[in-house]
Amino acid sequence: KGIKEMGIIRKNSFIIIIFILALGLRLLVLMNTEDCHGVAAGRAIQARLFLENGLIPGEWYSPVHPPAHLAILTLGLAAWNHPLAPRLISLIFGVFLIFPFYFLVKRLFGKSAGLLSALGAALYSTHIIYSCLGTGETLFQFLLVSGLLLFVRHVQEEEPGMLVGSAVLIGLAGLCRYEGILFIPALSVLLLRRPKQLAWFVVLSLGLPLLWMGFNYCRSGDALHFITINNNTVPVQYDWIRRNGTAIDAGYKALFWPRSLIAGLGPMVALFGAVGLVLALLKREKEKLLLALGFCLLAALFMAATLAEALYVQPRYGITLGLLLIPFAVYAGLRLIQMTGNRLPAWTVLALLWTMIPPLAVGLEQEPTRIPEFIIQTAAYLNANCKVGDRIVVTHCGDEKYREPLKWRSRLSPAMFSQMPYQVPRNGEWVADREKFFKVLSRDRITLLVYSPLGELGKVLELEKDRDIQQWQGINFILEFQTGDYSVYRVFQTEVR
Image (tube, rainbow, N blue to C red; front, side):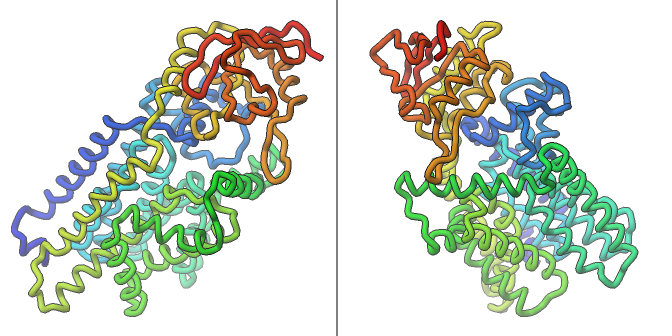
């Protein structure tokens, strides 16, 4: 009713305009930002290694991250071997999310709510930013929302093909981000009275995750290897944050996800979303309970895992929560108009959604959308001066997130960078071990060291910026290039003790 009263444009055309708006905003951000996300660069490097070494993973590959996004990256880089390719993959899935999201909300909340929610998704700042970074979030949300749409169509229309498509998409979503697997039992509950359909859905949706668990078992002897590694590394990440001066207590962890939603959606949309969610749960409106319960289950999982320090505090993980909350913000706004006897103008809900724009500027400053000049210069030096046969070790420079972007930006073959570990756990943190490091230099025939005194090797080597030639344990380190926090040393292995 609200859209009709505005008399601006036909509904069929409005969704196309929203799509164009979503595309335009994301292209604008893409053209004015860089991708300095360590996970994005790390995934792209793994995809390049697949292309260079074949699909049989070598010793460099550990099945910690789920494989769906990596597979898409590999296909994308095979089609266009360019640093921009991973970002464009995120952008494509981020923009085309608008259509399944619209049709899903339309079926559950009505046409007007569907259009307004699609507009909210187009303006959602954290989603815009990660549509321009090469991580797997937008692929995950596209698969998940598309799977939910097909599931709803099956329930409403009894179309068997929709159930099969839904199960496959939900299974793929679980292989993109592991929380997607949570939706398999959640949706299965809705099929308890249809045992044959339930069996098909469970078998098809769990098939791919079970195959992945089998691969983990074959590689490591642990079917849940990805959980084991996560439980070992995430506490170390929390300790690293604390050592850098951030006080992370129970209150900080409990409020992290509400704060992230407020920061990404804007205070008004987050507030209206919470009100709409409570209204839907209290009224027990059957059509809206699917998304309401999905939000509550995911929020509870995130909260519990964060309190247990089994989930790292990353705002990008909460993008799905924000998307699920947007329809309830629209629902609350439309209900407010109805409760006032339609005395409020229809554009009130549009005004609510426009409050989602200011958080974008803040998000662009807080997220890794800028690459420091010394990273750009160091990567350019490596690209111009590395020779065939060079083997390289890159330390971090006080911030771990810059190491993988430096490698990726150099455009060198990932095989040139040593994957051999030289760090050991000590007093709750991973530190460089001098003996292991010099063994890596010898075994991997390292010829170049990208070093920072602020990194993990600072206490092991203590190389001095103002000395061109230095020797440690019979190995000569000759300074070739220096900028910012990084120095590049040519390594000559004359003697190893």
